[in-house]
Image (cartoon, rainbow, N blue to C red; front, side, top):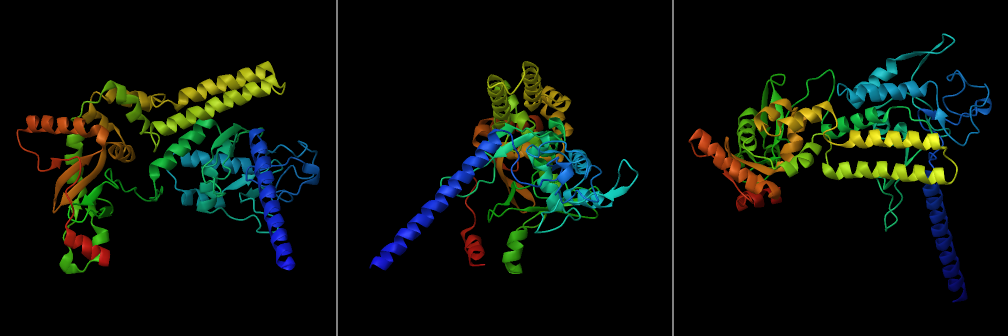
Length: 437
């Protein structure tokens, strides 16, 4: 009995110690983030700056400042003279929209960087001492860099949820004490490119497949999503009921391939007959640049607000001079303006076109069209070669019903499909077969 009691006490103490240590680590990480300090020892693009006693994986034999005088006391990260160039190229290439992560990795791995003394080195990853050495870039390494806000001069804190699980997305963001390696605008442009690509490959060497109704087309009989495919080098595009064909025998194939252009033209004809209320314009325009629309605009506004608040706190504590505070305030004003959906020339053009939706749709890219379609529609249901039903998102139900009446008035012919608030029920026999498969 006493032996078991001692074991219980020791177990409880061990659990308490573990929880206390975990809490202490979380508090330290939060404090470091709030003070603008980067977490982690080694990050590509940065080093400790204590060159005389450098232990950086990309120090000896790679960095031209290795063994020289110290640049800092080692507490605040400084820009690595070689790696910073790699980071800059990564953002420059990705923000152009012409390169995939894989393209950039391949290009970086053959790029030559000339040191001040004339020696040449190749760009490489940082590596982690004792785990793996520096090496060639991979698409995963490039992706991690592109989506990390530290390179724009920020520090994030994700922490843990109520169950103790680490969050994937940061809940707070602070201005870092480390230097930014890329301008905030180019970082934000890279995030816009990243969100608009979804999960498809986008390589400079291969023509991008364009499907404005991606993830919106469904088989009306089984309610299964239809995927976009192409043939003839991308000249012919179709929406295909691929999942049903994978799961069902040939005798139960029920949905033929549908030419993408035909149903896209029908949906576009309907949507462009809408009359958008003036109060909705900002909200719609936001989806040209943000996958989450105004919610993401609000999030970025909050980031700027937190930065201003943090700068004021640092000024009150004497860590910022009046001049430094004024510079941060000016930067925040510029960033706040850049966040607004109509801030760019493209945004201004799109805003002017909202009264002329047919012209607007011609001006949008396929990715931008898909962004807006997913705001407007829940689904496009196809039976045979024709659209059977179009289901709007609830806020746009009345607008699209009015657009349908307007389209009938212009063409003088009834529409081959219905605009519905909910799609018709699928074929129960097909559903049962799919569930069995």
